[in-house]
Image (tube, rainbow, N blue to C red; front, top):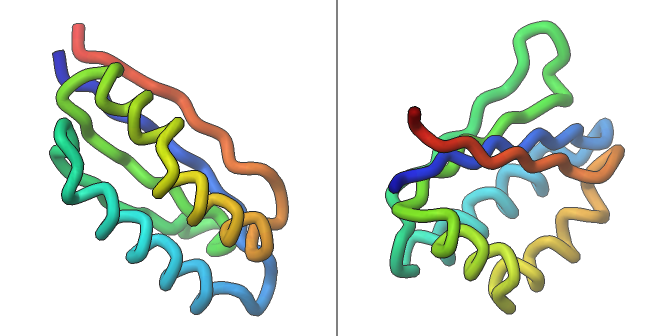
Length: 95
């Protein structure tokens, strides 16, 4: 069953460009993996430092494989430098 993962990130002031580069890098790595369906990034109107990524995967197992894999871990390290606080992730499934 397909799942959606909501990832919330708050970007440090002045790090927007680097953040966008990292999002593109992460998505381009994920697109080649089994189970990846789509991803989109939204920015808050009320607080432009907050970004929400909605990532869709064929199964929670596919998502977990990506989450624990070396590609995501390598880029996650880079994200730590541009984020004002740790990212939060919440998986959702269809009812």
